[in-house]
Image 1 (cartoon, rainbow, N blue to C red):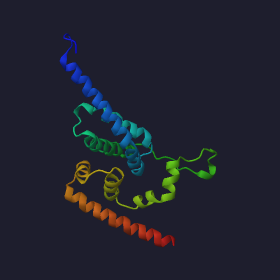
Image 2: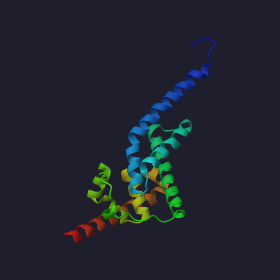
Image 3: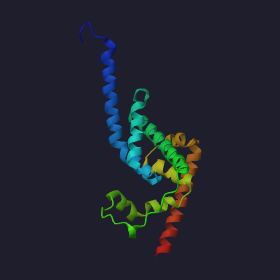
Image 4: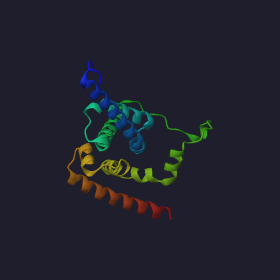
Length: 184
């Protein structure tokens, strides 16, 4: 370092490069889970909302603590908030006209993600759950958040999240068995 340079400047640039590395790592590891979480929650343009979530994360990088785990908790807190915003905005907009495939003349194939989800029946099983059950399973399984992180996002205690998760898994099991028996 030159004698005329500001000694804090090197620290700031190192912090910024650390923030850039952390942001890159967070985006690469968490964006597929965020996209899956948003898709399962019914957000219509999950790609755009995923980008919005990471833009919000980027603006908060200076105050972020806890490394990648801290970023993960913050990312899913933001994603949860964006989902709530999505449904609030949806309530204020006029109803959309349903899609009628037989009158659709487009020939573009569905995305691989759509084909995989359509064939798995996973979304159908999740849609059979209550809102809270679906939310806790998405945060715990798809987002891979801890009980504490899930409790913070949902505004509940860790004990309540454990109980809610247990009940959600039981409801999912019952729903899956009922669905399987009805198709046999």
